[in-house]
Each structure stands twice: as C-alpha cells, then as structure tokens.
Image (cartoon, rainbow, N blue to C red; front, top):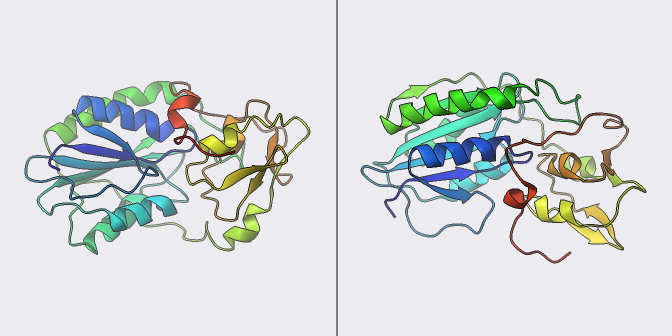
Length: 251
C-alpha cells in the first residue's frame, strides 16, 4: 500500500477529532488502531503514515506501542505523530521514536496539541475551552505535514507505571444503580475489556485506562472507586458516540 494513512487511538474523542481533521487536510485514509491488524506494508516513497493518540503520563498508550511494533511500514515513508495532551505529554513522542527506531524506521515529525485534560480518575476534567481552540493548531500541523517538514517537539518520558498491577486496578470500576444495562460502555471500550453480566458491565482485567466508559456513560453510572464521584464527565463535543464504537460485539 502506498496511500497515506492516519492511524488513531482515542478514549474521549480528542484524538479522533484531531485525526479526522488531519486525515482530511492531508488526504489520508483514517484507520482505527484497535481495528483488525492491517496486512501488507504501509507507506512508500511519496506517502505519509501518521499516528494520533493521547499522552498517558507522558508516555505511549500500551495499545499504540503494541500496534506500532507489529505494523509493517516501508522505510522510505514519511512518518509523523500528533499527541493530544492535557499537560506536559511530549515524552510520548520520544517513546514512539524509540519504538520506530527498533524497527529501523525514522519518525520525521512529532508535535503535541493541548486539549481538555480528562483523566477523571485523578482529577476533575480541566481546560474544557481548549477543544474549541485546537482546530487552528491542527491546521498548522497539517501544513507542516503536507510539506513533509522535519520537526520533533519531544521531552523525556515522565512515567512508566500506569499499567503496573493493571488486573488489580481494574477491580475499582463499578456501575451503580443508575446503570440501565444499555451496553454502550461495551461498544465504546477500544480493547474489548468490558462485557455485560446480568445486565451490568464487568471489567476483564486488561484496562487501557482511556476512561471512555466513565466519560461516555449516558446515565453517569460508572465510577472508579470513590475517586470519580461528583466529578464532571467529558468527551469531545465534535465527536459522536457512534464514531467511537467498535464493530458489532456480543453484549
């Protein structure tokens, strides 16, 4: 394959919004990272391959790291990355650069975009006004990518502890009496880590901590221990829930 492609991973929709805008601006196909693993080599001379994803503690989401590690990209491809972040998060650019280097590939361009901070497990969603301002930054980045500019805005990786004891951390999720059993959380979970058991969601011990389930729940029934009570919920206002859903899944 030598068409340009933008691969995306998103929980609350910020990264999907950025990926949609970028793919339209640079005339690239838009592909969900958590879809079936693509076959064949991507990129080639004259084409672009990009990755758009959120920063998790200044590092790569586990799903993105594993996907890039398996992806076949032709060495002459212009590779870029755009990270949506609520705070300092450009360590994820350095982390991706390392993953690509292990495959003898070069990351030519990487920048971050400040978006609303929404890791509700740690804090109330903040800086919600950023979503409306991000469009201008995305178009500036799109111009850089069109011209195949070489630029890496990166910093050191700030943490590598998010996924430690993940099976145990998963147990803190619960759904309260407000839960209607609608199954939306099952369809939105990007890694199929939630199933319905007797009409209630159950987490299966492999959470990515994208917090999609908490933030998109229409009845605000999902909590993480006692940390998320009374906190605002957030998802990108430009993205509809249907765009975030995986394909048909058994509930």
